[in-house]
Image (cartoon, rainbow, N blue to C red; front, side):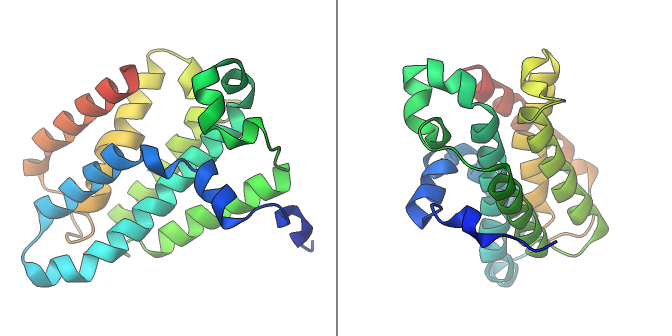
Length: 192
């Protein structure tokens, strides 16, 4: 099957940046950065992993917001506040473009994830949860308390763990209190 690149004719860089709502990423980038800093052994580890962390986490957050905006068009169009931030309310996107961009974001983010089994599984699971949170038929965001539980994982402790696994190939139980704290904070962010 040949990919029809005509579906991207209206996907300018500005359109894409607005569609993925970069301005809302601060707390989630912070979770990944805290995990990264928590695992550091020194300056060399920082220099080796920092840009990899930012790039893979940005791809992940872009994927999560891309899917969320695409499947929230109906509800966001009724809310004046959300209508302004969800570009898909005004500009429709084809299913092909939606899925191709989502797949590219996932794959590029995965490529910049450390090649340890735990890091790859964590990145894949948090991506799956982010999609399942917004996309039908699962749409966890409409299923209390699964909405808060899943948010605590894919926008909380898994982001922290993603940062942590940039420098460490394994998981240590001394990280557990931080995972719990980040999970609670993620739930608080969701409830605001």
